[in-house]
Image (cartoon, rainbow, N blue to C red):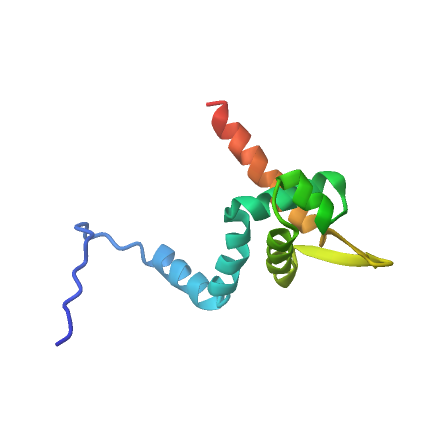
Length: 124
């Protein structure tokens, strides 16, 4: 038996133009799942610390990141793989050492915008 869905809004005013735009933008944007996965990287404290380090130091190897965060190389490698899978970091090899850096300026901008937003909220 299907449940009856109740409309929780008790107003009788529907703004058709706004409603049509809202529904239209949801239909035209079919990447919510991908975007949600992308932002999950920024909600993980360890990954956020790695991104912040790479934003400030430009490139580092797993060993140095592990020491900076007082974590194992294995744990850092796992986090870097997740970041690399979402194209937030890239790697380059120099001999046997792999260096990681931010993929592009978009990642830097996202970090900086987030920090700016937080700092503005603290000043209120």
